[in-house]
Length: 249
Image 1 (cartoon, one colour):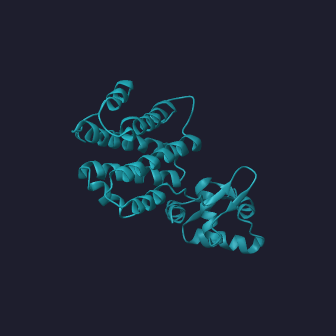
Image 2 (spheres, helix red, strand yellow):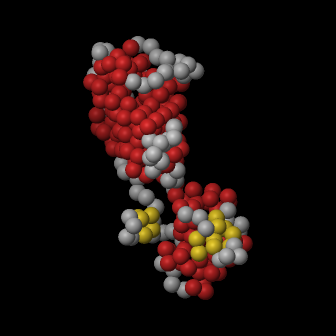
Image 3 (cartoon, rainbow, N blue to C red):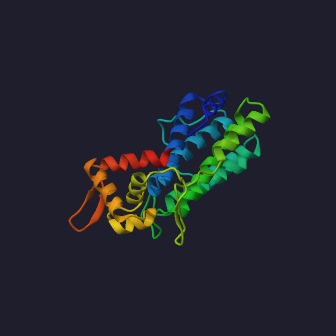
């Protein structure tokens, strides 16, 4: 998920406790986004924002709020404090405003509080891209790597992940052509549980109905799905775990 050079690059400039919280919260955002868990992905971004706020305090103010202490609300006065400090404008202006936007989406759009807008892919994608940009900028600005190495590492961080499925309302295509039919069934049920066998067969483009039913029975015997009396297929906790491994790989 992250190049092994990222952590030592950051540790060369920032305290270990801040780097640990930063990278752990980053991984949580990425994992939940890839698994299409929009609400957890957006919630975890709040931890990332708090970690980077402390890094900015360390960078611009010479000291930072301990991880064990509350930061307080993120507002205009915080932005003003960063902007009026001495340092590169990436730390003073650009990064704080990106973080503030993430903070607002997280707090104002039905993630941390009740709202008319529920957690959704659009908001989660904005947060996901913003988090990747911030981490890439930290690496670029703070590492002791050569310009060529830093550019390579930043490119790896911001490289766009490819979804397992291309589903735009018109097309439904598995982008990983190496997936087996059993794996495709699990992914379909992971994204939307309780689907009819014929619906699943159509989604994965499996032509032979008899052979497809054998695949479903094989998954059932392995306790990865259940086939209800109504004919609907339902993914089990074991199947969920396997589907997540497929998606993350």
